Image (cartoon, rainbow, N blue to C red; front, side, top):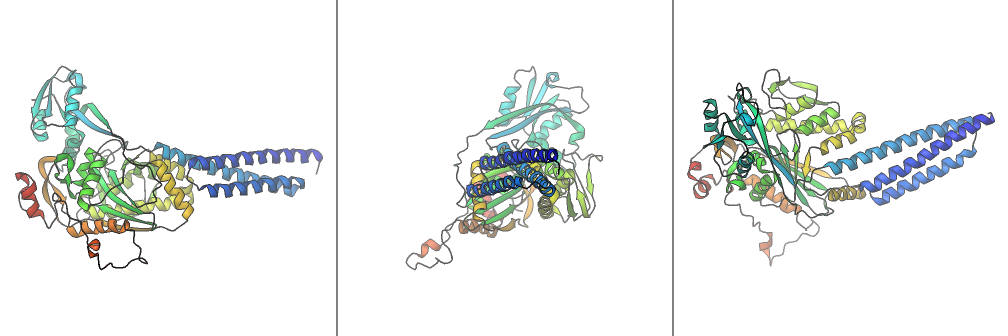
Length: 529
C-alpha cells in the first residue's frame, strides 16, 4: 500500500474515532440528564465504550487494507448507533418536559347567531340572550361583554334561549361549550347547519398542586380521563374514557379498571346531585376523581387527562395501524361534523386505518348491539394495534416522534421527576410486571335526569354494589402490607379483618335507588324507573 494512501486512511480513521468519542460523550450525557437509566447502567455503558475506544485506537497499528476497511465500517456503525441513541433520549427528555402539569383548566363560552344572519362579530349584536344561572363561567363571560353596547335578555334554560334566537327576539345568544355539545349530540339536531359562532370567550383557572413528589415505590392510583375534544388537554370537555390505574410497585402489578362513561355518579359541583360521569369532565378532571373516590371509598393520588386528538396524531405519526374492524358503520369526523361529505364510514374487516378513521372507530357507539361495550372493545383493539406498531422496526424508529406528539396532548399532576424515578427503578429491578383489567359496566341503563343538563332526561347506568365492592377490595388488597407467607389470624382481634367500608349515602346504586333518591335529592328525581 502506498504511503500516501496509508496517511489518508489513518486521518479518516482518526476523524471517525474522534466522532465516536464525541458520540459516546453525547450519548452518556443524554443518559445522565434524562434521569431514566440507572447510574450503574450508565457506568457500565461508559466502561464498555471506553474499552471499545482503546481497542480501536490500539488497532491503528494494523495498517493493511482489510484493517482500514473494518475500522471504518465499525466506527461509522457505532457513530450512527450512538447518534440515534442520543437523539432518541433527547426526544424522550423533551417529551417529559412538554407534559402539562394539570394546573391550568380552560372553559369556553360562545356567542352564536343564526347562520343566515348578517352578524359577523360581537360588535354587530344589539340584543344578547343568556341563561340566568349563578355560574362562574357565565358571570365571567358577562363581565367580558360589559364593554359592548348591547341589551341583555335572561332566559331560564338553553332550549328557551335558542327558541328566542330562532324567533329573532335576540340577535345572538351566549352558550357554553357544554350546552353546545349537548345540542350537537341530539339525534334530531341541525345545530351546525342553523348556527354560527361569532365570538369566543375563554376563562382560565389555575390551581396549585398539593401533590408531593416521590419515587413512586408505594402503591398509587391514577385516574385517566380521555376527553372527547380536540386540541390541548387544558380545555375542559366530556370525559368519554374513564379508567383507574392501580399501580402496585411492591408486587409489580397494574390493575386497569374501565368505568362506563354513562355511570350515574354524584356531581360535587351540583351539591352531589347525580349526573353522568362523562359530564363531570366539564368541570375538570378533578371533578371525576372526586366522584370516583366517593363511590369506591378509595384515594386517587394522581390524575391524567388526554384528548382524542392525540390518537389521530399518534396513529398518523406511525403511518397508520392495522385493525380488525368488527362492524359496518358511519361516524362523525374529528370536528363533530355529521355532514355527508365529512362522515367517516368503515366496512367490517381487517384493514389499515389512519388517525381519523381510528378515532371514528374508537368513538362509535350508536349502532344497535354495539353501544358502550363495543366501543370499549374497539378502544382496546386500537391500543393493542398502536403497541404492536411501536414494537415493529418501523414503529421503533418513530417512537421518539410518537412520545413528543403524545406529550402535547397529556395533562397530569404526576410529577415528571417522580415518573422518571419510577421508570429508573423499574429498569433497575428488571422484574416482569403483570397486568389485570376489568370493566365496571352495569346492565341497568335507563332515562334519568342529570344535574348538569336539566332540559331532558338522558340514558345513564346505575352501578351495582357488587361492582363497587370489587373495586374497593382491589384497592384494599393493593395497600395491604401483609403477604401470604406472613398471613395468620389473630383470634384476639378479629375486628381488624372485617371490611368496614360503608357506601356514601349520596351514591345511587341499583340496590338503594328507591331509598336514596327520596331522601337526598330534589322532587324532580323522585320517580321510579
